Image (cartoon, rainbow, N blue to C red):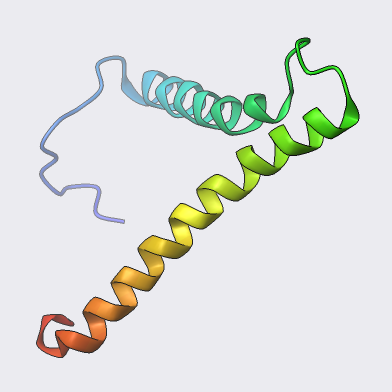
Length: 83
């Protein structure tokens, strides 16, 4: 968008290196999200696997909802902080 704008840093190696950093970073995040959903061999029964999957899936969802609720509460009590 702004090709001549001053950039605070550059990745050595040009655009190829920049794309490599993007691909490696994105793959790391994707694997970090997906791999926990694959239970280890120590979970024997279907019930244990379902409990594990619910903990992995619902834990971050609960934390996100708590954060969202705190944000909404802050918006209501501090309306001047909105931009």
